Length: 85
Image 1 (cartoon, rainbow, N blue to C red):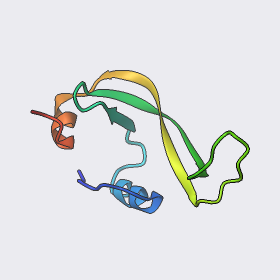
Image 2 (cartoon, rainbow, N blue to C red):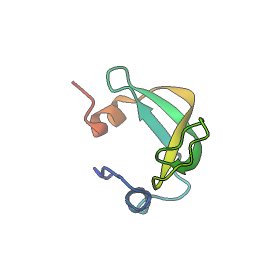
Image 3 (cartoon, helix red, strand yellow):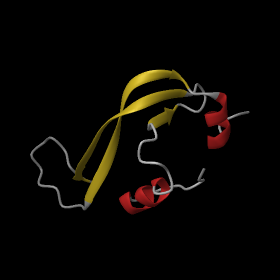
Image 4 (cartoon, rainbow, N blue to C red):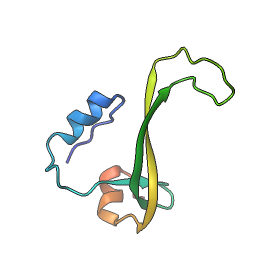
């Protein structure tokens, strides 16, 4: 288990590199009411992209989109994330 705070794609790849690639992946959300979600999509846009026809000039940002809610986050996961009281 890692306590990494990935800020870049490289950080995330490094944080995940020690795990079996077949391990299920979930997103934990809402520390006050912890839920688990599937990962829905991975997309990339320029940081300043808007839908107003403005040509983006900033570097790209990768977005991880949450998918279907699976259920409540298990207490052991909330503890590992430091979300327990």
